[in-house]
Image (cartoon, rainbow, N blue to C red; front, top):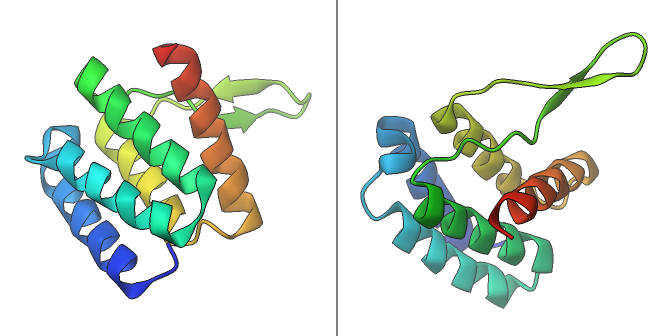
Length: 119
């Protein structure tokens, strides 16, 4: 997120998720409001992941997205089992510095997995 308003909203959402997880009151509405701010900032990846995130939460009532993997010595990847709350917190924290190359790659991983599950 690029602006102070966006970061304040994101911090508010992070605090809410920290306390109540994916079931936080008005979480979906907050994500929709943050998406509007992201539209104004002009980052299509952030706009898309926010929409997919709240659609996933609306549809599944949880955030059990398997988008993080661990690699062994042979290069085989294994999904990490992460609680819904920690998973959502991690994705939202990536948005704090969405311009960072590694963060963008991880956001894209989430985007791909959520799209596969929803569509």
